[in-house]
Image 1 (cartoon, rainbow, N blue to C red):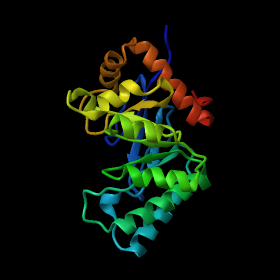
Image 2: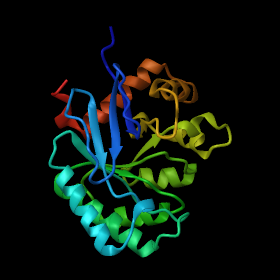
Image 3: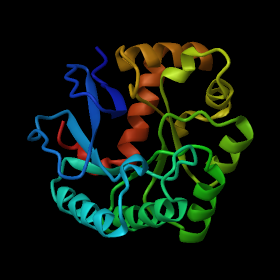
Image 4: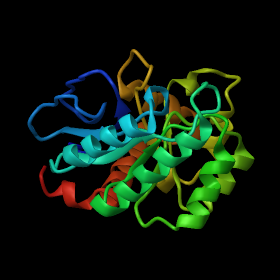
Length: 228
């Protein structure tokens, strides 16, 4: 019997699934449940919700306060988004602040990135972070994927894998197993359905994919595995 769980690296609803480890995204100041064995959290200041620099700094302090809980084990989602009217310079400032928070608290970083892959690449190149970075809801093309992959960045795929015209399909195909995660952000089904779709695209058995992603989670969050 295979006891390896599914990993849902990024989701917003409070999902409870018996065979899945959930990383639920929360906003600074939100409440969250006590640790029950499979419920983990990420906390970050999303670019859509940035306000004045002073207000953003207050929210960043709340991010740090929330990270004092052991099962809040990722920073994010955070990052640059060129599709919104929020001042881009402030977006980058707040993103950099959360990069430093991730380094200080030794937490992986979950990144929201829209039309700003070059900026993410340059920040990683300049800052040389030790903590893993995960591009969530990734839809970049193969060239961008290979560029970011050379920096050691991970990629999380979701509902776009069901869109035959999505660039994420070829990106998933070109990536080695040790670089990938899956998520249910904006997807109404279970993460198992994402795994099944990805297994077809990667031409592997779903159980193999399940083990590989579990191993990836083990590598980036090895301190958590002893809890299970």
